[in-house]
Image (tube, rainbow, N blue to C red):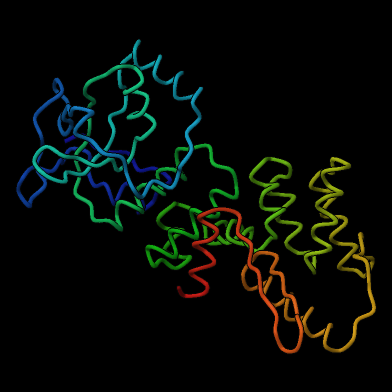
Length: 302
């Protein structure tokens, strides 16, 4: 049996997938499937027999990149098989390789080589997220959401998460802290307006208004990470730059403002708190994406 090299996944995807020489048959035991030339563990499956992974964390695939991959497949064929789990005798579900699967369909292929694995729903989710983290060109915010989803939906602690993705706990924590920034700054990370280095510095700025003011200044003046770190250090030393506009507030208004700050910190998004007539009022919790909404629902334990 061919020895498989260990990668940065640690006990993550490699452990979940098991050795690539074993594939699932109709029995309960994993057995090698004879096939695809002399390569053990790979079976050729009709595309029409494969359904996509409902746990796929990526919902958008660049059409131009897919067309380029399809053209490569037409010329070179499938170099790396996809991985599937068997649902029934002739039905399969993707675990990983959706870009290859979609590009193969564009290229006009009728069938595709695949590793067949056993996996329950939680393993499917974990495999799909870990594969994306390791293989896709994700931005820092997408990685942060993926880490958070792994912790929430797979019931992992930070130390366990680090083992799964082959990262130190401090690295995982740095990504997760990005989710404490207001949605506008998170969108800036996603859209490439600021880097993770900029964002990590902004996390240390007290009050969302200060964070946003500094965020806008970074974009407007094209600040380097070092410039942001210097500005944050000045704020910590008592030289706030920039300072949010101050207004005179009564005791009740000040209490509501303090509560709004607490809620904003707790949910990691800029919560709006309004007081109406009498004792009425409303709380609004904005979210950046479906993943962000799920994160907030988890915090609400809904």
